[in-house]
Length: 102
Image 1: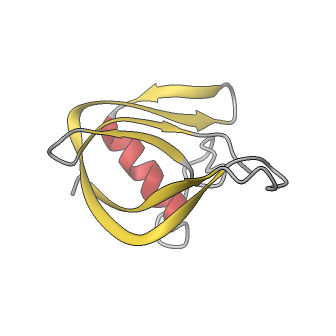
Image 2: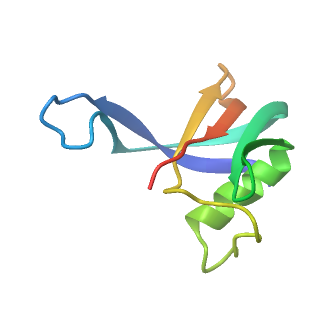
């Protein structure tokens, strides 16, 4: 299994938001697969973002999304479970960078 289900998010740039712009999820779910050559980065508690293989990033996304089912490995941080993702025309994730958000 090398896929994830994600909800399309829309930017909300209302100047009255107390914490600045935010992303609001829609109800539209899309299934993506990871490209075997995807560049993926996740946050570790001992040094910030680190480049990891796509299958490590997939396991990380699963553990942060369902920690009761997939325990988060020691040293990894979920940080709100937010990611910047680049997807190609075949719905393959080619880049995934975890964002710092609490």
